[in-house]
Amino acid sequence: MLKVHTEHRAPKGFPQGFYWGGAIAANQAEGAYLEDGKLMSTADIKSGGFFGGLRRDADYYPTHKAIDFYHRSREDLALFGEAGFNIFRTSINWTRVFPTGEEPQPNEAGLRYYEDMFKEARKNGMELMITISHYETPLALVDKYGGWDNRVFIDFYLKFVETIATRFRGLVKFWLTFNEIGNAAVVPICWDAAGIHPQSEHLTQRMYQAAHHQFVASALATKMIHKIDPEAQVGAMIAYKTVYPFTCKVEDVKAAEAAKRKEFFFSDVQARGYYPAYIWRFFEENSLSVEMEPGDEEVIRDNTVDFITISYYRSRVVSSDYEEPAEKTTNTLEGLVNPYLPKTDWGWSIDPDGLRLALNELYDRYQLPLFVVENGLGAIDKADENGYVDDTYRIDFMAAHVRAMREAAKDGVDLRGYTMWGPIDIVSNGTGQMSKRYGIVYVDLDDQGNGTGRRSKKKSFDWYRQVILSNGEII
Ligand code: BG6
Image (cartoon, rainbow, N blue to C red; front, side, top):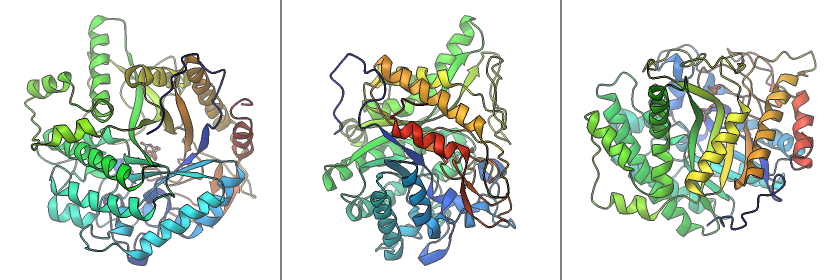
């Protein structure tokens, strides 16, 4: 278990031993989608990110080649080491280890790839934080059994967990059971997260049932990992968007509170160990039901997470008069616009103070160690002929968010680490674009996969290095 803070006087800045690094996901970076025994996952049939739709007959799938991290991880990890990272977050592609999800024995080539890569990361000075399921599930399992609302997925997942926890015992310090677990219940991400097609009938019902199975799977995985490797710690990972009411009209404030609870539901279950009363009421009022088996509630109660991690990109505004469309076709402007905040090239609000509020709220609610495991600026970069990008805008974005975290630490939040999203440019999960870049390292590839794939440092590379070297003092 991670030791929870007992010192109630807040530190002056980031604590000693703070983790600084970057985070990627296997399917957005590795490519090599059918190599060394790997088969297709749900992520491999997204032709243009999750907003672009699911097609099996598209001409081009950006994740199939991605940035070829599969073959270039040595070079990329060396760059991260040079930037001073002491932590690296990535995920394990389930279909490298169990290509159809049902093999009696794991695929040795897949396990060896991760073992070598993890050792390489350690050699470069990084601890590992591994997401077990980051928006991909073996396609063969989904084709045969449907999505995660089918309970059979729990056992397939646990077999995967047992295999990787055993093989990587002593190598991986932090495990995250599901990326942004709440997004299994969000359209259209339910496909990536739970293998449920956004056009399915009884969609909401199916998504909450899938979420229940993921809660049980996550709790059993937590128990299993603690047993296999008592030194390892297991965390929740939620997508956090700080919610503001559109006005101070009481109806808007109530709508904002309801929206918050819909998202807190997931971390409440994983951190507190039970379904809160408000969700039962929500189920009842919306004619939803979740089937549980005897023992599920005990499993969830007895195996809560050691820490909580969030992705934080933006805040959002909620009004009682406006309902977000269930299906969005683009991930540019989402919902109501906050007129007080600037926006990214993709229309996401830029709100570093929202991160400080988020961290305080989460810590007040759970009193558990926190990590920010995704945060960054998706922007259009223009590289010169040497691949250099003057991304001062990215430095400004990250600096403001690092300052906000420092303030949160000074507020007394037990914040343990920060892994910026996409330290090297990767394929966007939402849109499938390469041109939505987050990296401090540029990759010469365009939206159709044309380019040399050459890596080069952006201006933000040196900036982040200095932040890390100074443990967040020089920003
Ligand atoms: C998070 C996901 O929601 O946001 C990542 O965990 C994703 O996989 C990131 O890449 C940024 O979103 P996008 O759509 O800009 O890639």
